[in-house]
Length: 596
Ligand code: NOJ
Ligand code: NOJ
Image (cartoon, rainbow, N blue to C red):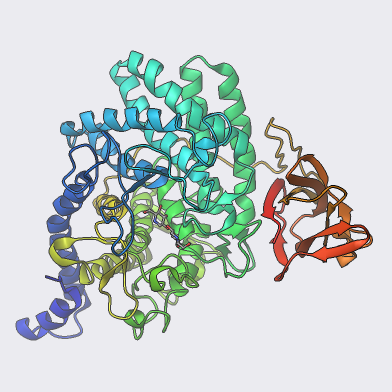
């Protein structure tokens, strides 16, 4: 059966015979419909998560103890019965928060099983490397904890950070309870490995959370920042002053780098930089970032992209708008200022490029988080940056601060609550039979699509519902953080910083060559010799078959490039198209390419 909020809502006035223009009644009806959806769906979502966790989850045969599979489907229509570090960490964050908040003590065994599984997985050598040579960036493993050796977008550097964040929440709770031996002997060594990986590799590119783009990803950078901040405190509590200092230093650098994703002219986050061209950059990546780095003890701070910050609201406006209109037939005809179905990014074509439940829910959750924060602060501030977001709800609103006693505050918060509920109502409208949440619902008619029973979809429902009820996760220390004016990217692992107006880019090209043949680089800017094969820059073969060169290019420069081979005076170019790249505003990066 399919719950149909809109159908019900449009019938109710006729049945009750109320005056059509009574907005308040409409609002109450909408909210109570969402209320009843949430009370029905919450236990379904919780059970949906537990069914996908080994060893005894009802839908995950063959999953080892503590292993969270992304979904039970093993091939038809997609194979999701693997454990992804990202999905697994996000899902266990929900369960750990429930445990910490005293809402479900029965979760404890599963939590410790998940930690034990994570400790084993960290040690599994895999195509990304070993535990000490990059293996922690491996995105997914088979459900029996053996490595997945097929081709994949690897590494993905958000996984270790998310796992550290989740485990740190548990460690902090247990420390407060006085269970220090498990924290010191088991959790800290687990967390420390993930954090060392983040410390040493945050300034390298990798695949984004959607596993498609090899670049720098806003979500990844933001969760890395959070992980290092929390890790620095934990390290200090564990008496590891050296790590505490190193994590703090790198957290400052990461926070600095985080600022470079913001486009002040376009007023939104470019979700993938240093690669990933050919897209607008508008991506639910950034909305997910706002909810997963929400700190209820912070204010509406822009540096950490808090849900109620002007930058995050402007970005919300732009990302939601990118899904309006005819992109998805199910969204056509929905007016500006009303909720629409939200996908990953508008150019998406995976499984037909559809809206997703978890991104639609996250779009609601950011607003619930913001409402929580405004209530706590006692006012709403509208800036030039966020003005357009607020004008959706009150066209005449002006830049300024509105106290909770003002009518503007009441109007805005009421309308934003209704707007947020609209996203939940869309999930309700297109939910699967029996409240099932797949990964996607089709753009054409909203039928559930791609992976059925996606664990992450269920987790996303629970966190959105909680946020709506004002039940929010713990603080992580975002309050008062500001990005340093000067950014340094020296991560201690070599590479050096950009400094000044240039950015150091290390080009790495994997190419097998014959004796006497060499690899060169040229491209569209002066620093790359303006497409001149004669002046092209020679790469070093010290790490053959990886050829390398580090070039300083102007910060922010957008350029194209190609590698060429020279052998006995003959020049061979890589095949088309040209590679393209936009240098960050600061920092240093490594680009990994293979001869083509
Ligand atoms: C599978 C990934 O999980 C998905 O995110 C991606 O869109 C497709 N592969 C296509 O690359
Ligand atoms: C594809 C999604 O793009 C990715 O984010 C996720 O980790 C996997 N599916 C597994 O759910």
